[in-house]
Amino acid sequence: AAGGDAARVLGAPAPDDVCKPWGGGVGDAQLAWLEKTLADAVTNEERVLIASHCALSPTSARPGMAAWNARELARTLEACPAVALCVAGHDHPGGYGRTLVINPKDGLHTFGRVHHVTLEAMLEAKRGSTSYATLEVYDHDVAVVGVGAATSRRLQVSPDGNFTGVALFGAAMNDIATGGRGSGDGGGDDVYAGVNMDELSIVDWINANRGRGGLDVKIE
Image 1 (cartoon, rainbow, N blue to C red):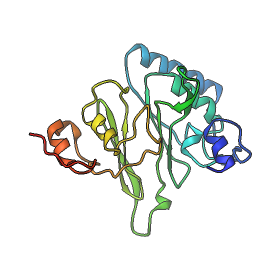
Image 2: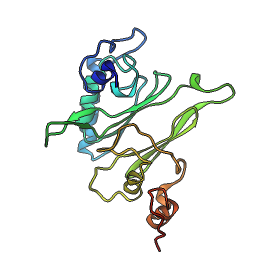
Image 3: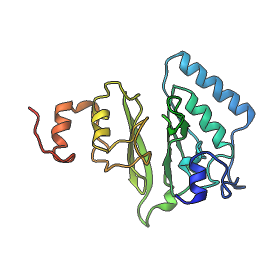
């Protein structure tokens, strides 16, 4: 990445990472409410999906287009085990990112758990088209099902090491963005966007993906 982009992703101040006057941020009162709400979610063993106008992590928007205090917010969200996904708008081209955090085991940067998705605006759609998405939320993954100019994504929300069924096989096939490893680009070919994965058995799912990983072996 270019120098400014690399610094932005790594969380260091970048020359072009400035506050835009048409943006916004989260004030002290809102932040206090958010922290209390997240603490209650942890106590109640709930999972949290956050929707905001501006992106809450600088990695999911262009320089200066995330919330004014996005770095602080991203750290708060990453520290809360209840938070799984943040969805935003504002930056019309859209984007995806995960906050880079320090791995306590080796001191190196690694991608955090929380997915940050910025949806493409309708202004990005071609004439006669549209841009919006729906969310399909499952125990182990979330499908962002894009329509028109909106990008479809499958995002793992279960910790690595758990038996995550289709989500785990999806990560192996590189069509799902994981919560703890991978490129962090949220990409994939979205073959199953719009499909209720809970209704597809593991064996059926593997057979439906025959050949995509190289070896073509049918499982009986």
